[in-house]
Amino acid sequence: MINALEQYDPQIFELIRQESARQSGSIRLIPSENYVSKAVMLASGSCLTNKYAEGYPGKRYYEGQQVTDLIERLAQERATKLFKADHANVQPYSGSVANLAAYSALIKPGDTIMGMSLSHGGHLTHGWKVSLTSKFFNSVPYPVNTDTGLLDFNMIEDLAKQHKPKIIVSGATAYPREIDFEIFEQIAKKVGAYLVSDIAHIAGLVVAGLHKSPVPYADVVSTTTHKTLRGPRGGMLLCKEEHTSKVDKAVFPGLQGGPHMHTMTAIAVAMAEANTPEFVAYATQVVKNAKILAAKLMEYGFTLVTGGTDNHLILIDLRSKDIPGKKMAKALDRARIVTNYNTIPGDSAPPMNPNGVRIGTPAITTRGMKEPEMEQIADFINTVAENIDNESIIEKVGKDVLLLCSQFPVPEHFIKQ
Ligand code: DSN
Image (cartoon, rainbow, N blue to C red; front, side, top):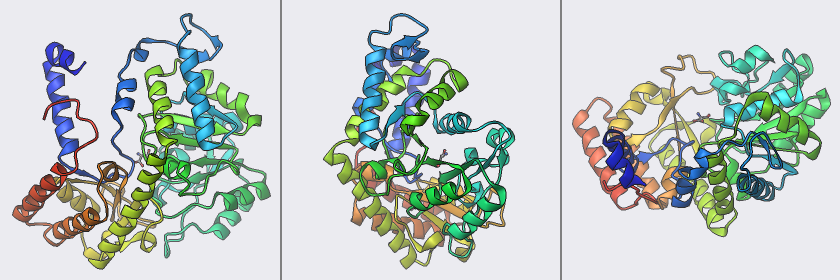
């Protein structure tokens, strides 16, 4: 297939080659990114991209569903088994659509939702002010405790009692500790709210048994499929039996038309891969790597939000180093270490230039990096921070990064480098 692309569209072929080289020749620490297997990549690039399948298995609006029905049922079965859920909807195009579908399945426009504030580690679609989720719904964001960086359940319960939300959203994109979904359920019950849990970041850790699952507690669980879960870019909803029909209708025809069958096919492959001892070993190493990286960074004097990590991500508070987050992320990028600048809880700086940098270990662990490499990576990050205005040292770190990368090949290279 890739040879055909080289022949028919050399310009795009060349850009893909460059991106492939970039992904291979850098230490990718963005905690929401990963490398998929060849099987997932093949399914994602398969002929299923050619097929419309509006509706659900057995109830479609187009003919020719002999195979698509089988694929969707298989994807649903694999997802429900993996997450031990009553029902799975594998059609959401992304996590954002999945979240909106979860809300619209359970409540009406104008009702109140309570999710973690974006600037404290939540997601745009948890009701942040610039998101449609705060325009369709009345949003009351909850913060974390800015002294500890931790969820403060007393504060969340007080806010919930005061505002009586119809939905409480538990889940985060920049929270380095385990989330207690059981306490969230207790609070939701006390105020008569539904609980929606967004596990986009931690789904791979949940299925590996390394993070408590929200499935027994939440009315609806939302996830992406491409972060720690290591599937293609997509979304998914899991729910209790009683919500099945509402959730399905919210996704189609409520928000979407035809599902992306090629993505759904690749999700089915990823679910099978995640249901193996090899995946559990992978996820275990993701957490081990994050803990080692965090410990080493603290030895170098970095301040970490919450003082470390329990999961796959680390949020560095750069105020003690007196380096703005964007400057640090850009310097690291020049040294071939790819991160993203991020707000820290209670950040006084704007989101476009916050005081934090967010890093994580899912992608580098897929490449096979372990404890010794985490020590090296911490050393690289520290060297860049100590020499933030010294381009020749940053360039030298970039060369060392390239050497390290060459020892840990990306799982599949479609394109010669
Ligand atoms: N943008 C994703 C992340 O990086 O966490 C969340 O959607």
